[in-house]
Image (cartoon, rainbow, N blue to C red; front, top):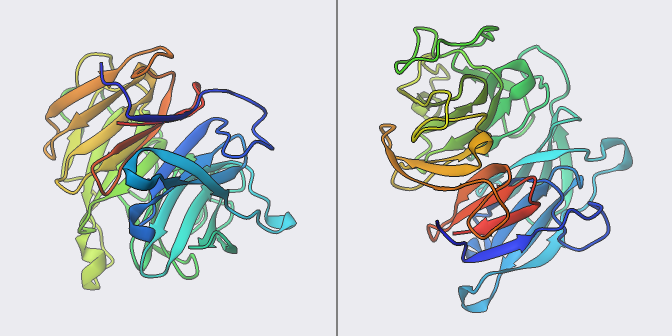
Length: 316
């Protein structure tokens, strides 16, 4: 069993009033500025995003600040995903119950809101995971069973990733993906490769991980193939199988990390979907998880894992 190098949280608390308290932590990510020394963590039931700073000498992290509250009419209810645009110096936070994306500057000041509730292109329903590059935001539009690409400036619709329609029925749970593998059911997270050419989608409702080629976005062609280039995973608890996976990440070498939430573990796969390693298990001891909800690979190849029911974040 892997033991974490650093851990924060572990007490449910009230979700309010205590600096850095993590009540049901969800998405987390290291900001691309300040030399990779700031970790942002969304506390979903706390209604806020906390920022941690790397300690001198790289020995763990310490609570730094909380992102400023939006205006009263834009109050943050349930932050889930966190992503960044280095070129724009902006932070993007999905709000599951306000069906929108909050935008902050790199100093933690609220700037604007993108999108609103609905089913039309560019509208969201219970969004969760999010990824971003300079011009585009990729969002897991969970309640609408789809992934959308939107313009980072004004939130206007750009493209769908995969099918633009929900399957409304489950893929057959077999070793090989069905012909409708481009369809998604309750996608909960997305992750963008370092070169921005591949998008990894956690297709939670189908218990699969799907990789899509999104390189056309950066060549002026907004068309994205509806079929994934790689699909892996199936329902179960054996090695390589998934149960209600919630989070996904991809490192600089293309390895895919999955928060296999229902199995209380983390699994790591090669770019072709071959399992490399898994660790965790149900519990509260170091290296165990209650319900891991998000994963992130930092610039120093640190692996960050948020645990919703144990109310903590671990670094491996």
